[in-house]
Length: 278
Image (tube, rainbow, N blue to C red; front, side, top):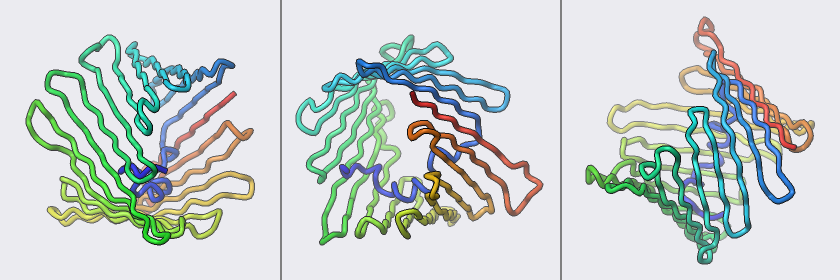
């Protein structure tokens, strides 16, 4: 895996903040044609509102085209050129009817699993630029990734959203990550693979300015049936759970819930996610 900056702490995030922790009703139906075109329809019901959207993806080998249509009627387009030079992908994107105001160019570069760079910029007269860089150091089986990210707002002439951090992995089963950002949040994340079927993780975030501290711990385990269960407990007493199972090897169903263990009078939340693939 290329050492992109956003891979730092991924083992912990997969346990604590996986997208399956959600409290709406989501339905996704997708299929793939013989010529390599992926068709996907998604619908989200949140309370009394329902938001549908559709996406068509075509992978031509050296390029990929993604088009998506939202309920609002906006059409998003993204064209990616793969391996423009070895290790470099370039993406041009935008939406209609916004046109030039939504235009963006993004590049992604990986060099022999040693360096990973991502950068994106709007195509406006005063562009907003975001860059992240990661680098890997192999220390006798101990995998260390160092990196950072930052944004630059040309209209205001200021650097925004910077963050620096490191990730440490030992023998593929112990993960430690640390970071600090422009909001003065210091974050430490740990994940431990107990065995082939169980991973435990924890996170502590402390703000150096307000001295406020937040904590979360969680566990993810695979059952003999092939299903996955995850539980997250936050320092506030909020407990989140999710059970995800595969229907036929491709399609998945996830049921999730959340409640406040310190105040059971608070109404619990429930979510259902169904992903059909044909």
